[in-house]
Length: 302
Ligand SMILES: CC(C)(COP(=O)([O-])OP(=O)([O-])OC[C@H]1O[C@@H](n2cnc3c(N)ncnc32)[C@H](O)[C@@H]1OP(=O)([O-])[O-])[C@@H](O)C(=O)NCCC(=O)NCCSC(=O)C[C@@](C)(O)CC(=O)[O-]
Image: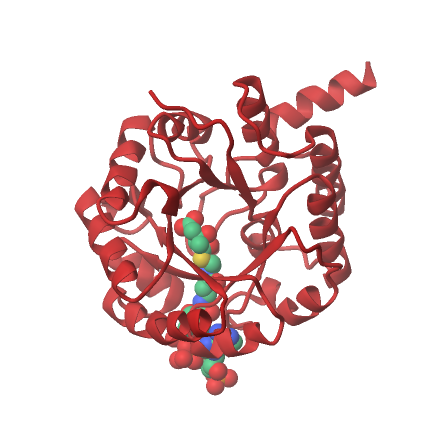
């Protein structure tokens, strides 16, 4: 067992979290969330996505949100770009990283981005070339690496296949996503092993939704493989509009509590992170969906 001594967390709350909210939130509020996350020590934040506003109206203020950021040199701001149109709009906002997002399931690919896996790779290829030529980092995400809402269980071989397609077009890093949170530790390890057949340990990350309460266990299971990069979402926000019933990503607060408790550094101030979670949860009219945040907030009250 080789546990990493430091873990990099990418907070995807402003993007993955808020893309699924029914309630419209102002750009100002989203900007306030990003600022609070960076104040809490997050160095990697997924801010928004440049997708069709007809498909995901919640992200229609992408350029406004990016323009309103008070950027820090030591923070990397990432955005999702499904095709060249999205990339060309995104690049005007000066992202540090763009994310192309495919799936290990044909049905999910069709529902989410309206094309087959093969077509998605054709759409990503010019995005990757343009981003790399402009010195912008490129991350790839593979949805449904364990299970799909339309196809059921997904074989690890499909993850390897999509990872190879992504690698062949120059994607530098791959995120292994359990989009609907059906994974359990051994299954998630198998999906991660499948990605590791193509990408090096330093170039993979985990992205686990918590629908069945397994995301922390899945995080630990992959930490034990040496994985040291994870997407997490402040206050457990999130879900994908094309994965009905799936809940948010694992809460950043819960992962930070786990990691710090194991003596693993994150550079994140848990108290300030909890404040960021309270800020966005209040705007949404609910409590943070994080056990650690709830416990520590109760403790603050005495
Ligand atoms: C991918 C598309 C755009 C293809 O959508 P499409 O309809 O196939 O695209 P098209 O090229 O045929 O164009 C149709 C219309 O969309 C416009 N269009 C085309 N592209 C863009 C763009 N980039 N930005 C803005 N507008 C765009 C285009 O200009 C045109 O406009 P019209 O002429 O009808 O007015 C569409 O399917 C879409 O936007 N899907 C939304 C996907 C999405 O955001 N899903 C959620 C994020 S993924 C996720 O959450 C999973 C992840 C990453 O977190 C990991 C996990 O947990 O699994």
